[in-house]
Length: 271
Image (cartoon, rainbow, N blue to C red):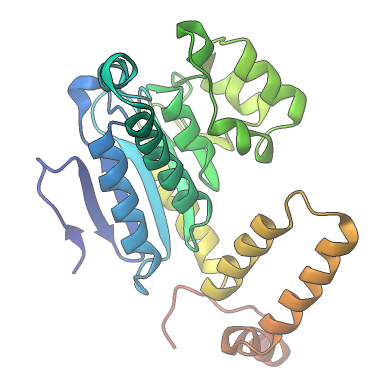
């Protein structure tokens, strides 16, 4: 059933709208930090969406004035001052798992950003397939300003922007508005003020109507596997993926539809 799937008091609110699942970070009083509880809840919600055949795309957004202010600095301070090496590593691994699940997600993922997307919050947006933002939104990797490092995001930021841009973003913590973030490639599209969520949903529906679920998932998986490979090894892996997808029922349906009608299927319609 479409609609609200969890109470407003939950730290991650789930809202279904047909094939779309919107996950809203709901600690607006603290600008939706990636606390241990938030990271755990968001990872679980993403894992659930990955295996739900009714979900075609996941939209991430934040309640209140901001998308996400990043790490929970209060929790970080407690761990840094009183935590053991093991507890600090466990906390870092929790965020690692969140980013791993998001980056490897088989469904389309779109970040709808308003207000601030700072440090880990900026990383959360960056890890999505697409980022829709409002002109007044603000992006910044602020870690080095407090003596911290953008460690996890450094492994995937260059998937979105060129290496020299990633270096600048991580070493020079300049606050970027939506227009500048779009110019640098950190954002894919600007929405009107207050319209980022609606525009993200429209974008997701548009893409999902044009791309078969299996083809989208297989393409994302192939891109993840070939990053960093030599071209010959990547080409061999791509040939295997090519052959595997050819025999998938969705590929057979798409080819047959085009041969018969000169049109591709609407992949949001049931058959």
